[in-house]
Image (cartoon, rainbow, N blue to C red; front, side, top):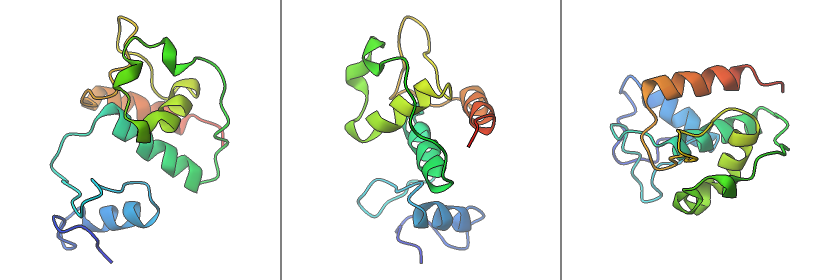
Length: 124
Protein backbone atom coordinates (compact mmCIF):
# COMPACT_ATOMS: atom_id res chain seq x y z
CA UNK A 1 0.00 0.00 0.00
CA UNK A 2 1.40 3.39 -1.00
CA UNK A 3 0.26 6.22 1.26
CA UNK A 4 1.93 9.10 -0.58
CA UNK A 5 0.07 11.10 -3.19
CA UNK A 6 3.31 12.11 -4.93
CA UNK A 7 4.93 8.68 -5.29
CA UNK A 8 4.05 6.52 -8.25
CA UNK A 9 4.19 2.91 -7.05
CA UNK A 10 5.53 1.96 -10.49
CA UNK A 11 8.45 4.43 -10.28
CA UNK A 12 11.92 2.91 -10.01
CA UNK A 13 11.99 3.95 -6.33
CA UNK A 14 8.33 3.17 -5.58
CA UNK A 15 8.92 -0.17 -3.87
CA UNK A 16 11.77 1.28 -1.78
CA UNK A 17 9.51 4.10 -0.56
CA UNK A 18 6.74 1.62 0.26
CA UNK A 19 9.19 -0.62 2.17
CA UNK A 20 10.78 2.27 4.09
CA UNK A 21 7.37 3.68 4.94
CA UNK A 22 6.02 0.32 6.10
CA UNK A 23 8.91 0.00 8.57
CA UNK A 24 8.64 3.67 9.64
CA UNK A 25 12.14 4.33 8.35
CA UNK A 26 10.89 7.17 6.16
CA UNK A 27 7.59 8.85 6.82
CA UNK A 28 7.46 11.75 4.41
CA UNK A 29 6.21 15.15 5.50
CA UNK A 30 3.17 13.95 7.43
CA UNK A 31 0.68 15.52 5.05
CA UNK A 32 0.45 12.71 2.50
CA UNK A 33 3.53 13.85 0.59
CA UNK A 34 6.90 12.14 0.37
CA UNK A 35 8.55 14.64 -2.00
CA UNK A 36 10.99 12.14 -3.54
CA UNK A 37 12.85 14.86 -5.43
CA UNK A 38 13.58 17.03 -2.39
CA UNK A 39 17.16 17.10 -1.12
CA UNK A 40 17.61 15.30 2.20
CA UNK A 41 18.85 17.10 5.27
CA UNK A 42 21.47 15.73 7.60
CA UNK A 43 18.90 15.30 10.36
CA UNK A 44 16.46 13.49 8.04
CA UNK A 45 19.19 11.04 7.04
CA UNK A 46 20.13 10.51 10.70
CA UNK A 47 16.48 9.76 11.52
CA UNK A 48 16.23 7.20 8.71
CA UNK A 49 19.42 5.44 9.83
CA UNK A 50 18.20 5.47 13.43
CA UNK A 51 14.83 4.00 12.47
CA UNK A 52 16.52 1.34 10.36
CA UNK A 53 18.87 0.48 13.24
CA UNK A 54 15.88 0.21 15.60
CA UNK A 55 14.09 -2.12 13.16
CA UNK A 56 17.18 -4.30 12.86
CA UNK A 57 17.66 -4.59 16.62
CA UNK A 58 20.82 -2.50 16.95
CA UNK A 59 21.86 -1.34 20.40
CA UNK A 60 20.70 2.27 20.41
CA UNK A 61 22.02 3.09 23.88
CA UNK A 62 24.96 5.37 23.20
CA UNK A 63 26.59 7.77 25.57
CA UNK A 64 29.14 10.43 24.98
CA UNK A 65 29.08 13.86 23.44
CA UNK A 66 26.07 15.97 24.27
CA UNK A 67 24.24 17.50 21.33
CA UNK A 68 24.10 20.73 23.29
CA UNK A 69 27.84 21.08 22.68
CA UNK A 70 27.13 21.99 19.06
CA UNK A 71 26.74 25.72 18.45
CA UNK A 72 23.65 25.12 16.30
CA UNK A 73 21.89 22.75 18.72
CA UNK A 74 18.78 24.94 18.63
CA UNK A 75 18.44 24.31 14.88
CA UNK A 76 17.72 20.60 15.43
CA UNK A 77 14.08 19.72 14.78
CA UNK A 78 12.37 18.15 17.81
CA UNK A 79 11.55 14.97 15.86
CA UNK A 80 15.26 14.44 15.14
CA UNK A 81 16.76 15.00 18.61
CA UNK A 82 16.86 11.36 19.71
CA UNK A 83 18.16 10.14 16.35
CA UNK A 84 20.87 12.78 16.13
CA UNK A 85 21.94 12.11 19.71
CA UNK A 86 22.38 8.45 18.81
CA UNK A 87 24.05 9.17 15.46
CA UNK A 88 26.59 11.58 16.97
CA UNK A 89 27.45 9.28 19.86
CA UNK A 90 27.63 6.20 17.63
CA UNK A 91 30.03 8.05 15.35
CA UNK A 92 27.68 7.93 12.37
CA UNK A 93 27.55 11.71 11.98
CA UNK A 94 29.95 14.39 13.04
CA UNK A 95 30.10 18.15 12.97
CA UNK A 96 30.70 20.21 9.88
CA UNK A 97 33.23 22.58 11.41
CA UNK A 98 33.08 25.60 13.71
CA UNK A 99 31.35 23.43 16.35
CA UNK A 100 28.31 23.08 14.07
CA UNK A 101 26.25 20.00 13.31
CA UNK A 102 24.30 21.61 10.44
CA UNK A 103 21.15 19.53 11.01
CA UNK A 104 19.14 21.52 8.46
CA UNK A 105 21.92 21.45 5.89
CA UNK A 106 21.69 19.26 2.84
CA UNK A 107 23.35 15.89 3.19
CA UNK A 108 25.86 15.99 0.35
CA UNK A 109 26.73 12.85 -1.56
CA UNK A 110 30.09 12.75 0.24
CA UNK A 111 28.49 13.19 3.68
CA UNK A 112 25.91 10.52 2.89
CA UNK A 113 28.61 8.10 1.76
CA UNK A 114 30.57 8.66 4.98
CA UNK A 115 27.47 8.28 7.14
CA UNK A 116 26.50 5.05 5.39
CA UNK A 117 30.04 3.68 5.69
CA UNK A 118 30.16 4.46 9.42
CA UNK A 119 26.68 3.01 9.87
CA UNK A 120 27.72 -0.23 8.15
CA UNK A 121 30.71 -0.51 10.49
CA UNK A 122 28.52 -0.42 13.63
CA UNK A 123 28.16 -3.49 15.78
CA UNK A 124 24.61 -4.67 16.13
